[in-house]
Image (tube, rainbow, N blue to C red; front, side, top):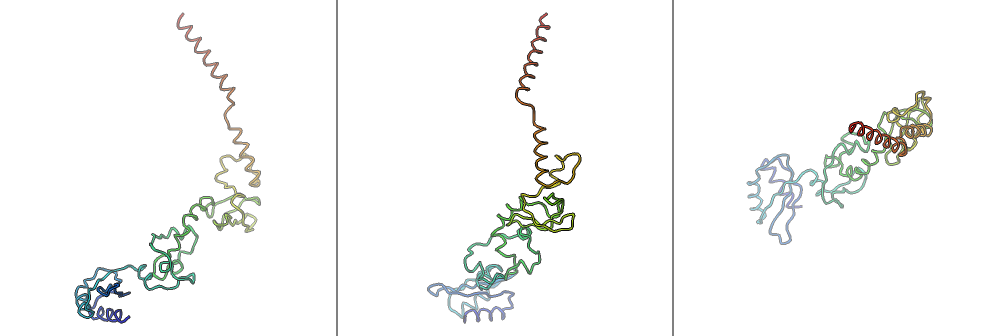
Length: 241
């Protein structure tokens, strides 16, 4: 602590725009390692000479980022627990605002930023799972067919695999993803007189339409092939004559 106070005082006297974060000696006291944070490159050669004269040891300066600064200083996160970077996290992974969108979190910087001022590292922990779950979900605001009629998706719950739907009857109901049928995906297979049937009946109609579109059986194909072969033989006989 004494070395840290002296280093900070000397940095202020040198008019350097740096923040001394931590000072530590190596095991034999032959080197003093100084961690500092700065937004730009700094010429600290004069500071190193002054500190070497005071401590009579070799001085090493190491510039760190805001995340490393939080890791060295330690603290408590928004969850009320010790910072992940201090307690167990060894490497920093890239974190993007897209991860917060995948989890439907508020995009307020104060809500999704850590003590370092950067996006929370924990946003990346479950991002892969949320991506996989979101593939099963309908789009927010899309029109879907439910067992209780047509409605629009209001909220998504990827972990529960459910959605909250605002129905045409002005009711708000939560359904599982398996109970829904998108009107856009089913429009190509819909019947001519749609009476807004339930998802199960509509799915049965789609299956019946799909069966009707299937090609003929192989027996019909064989008959057509045999007929074509007979026609070829007749043409050859005519050509020979």
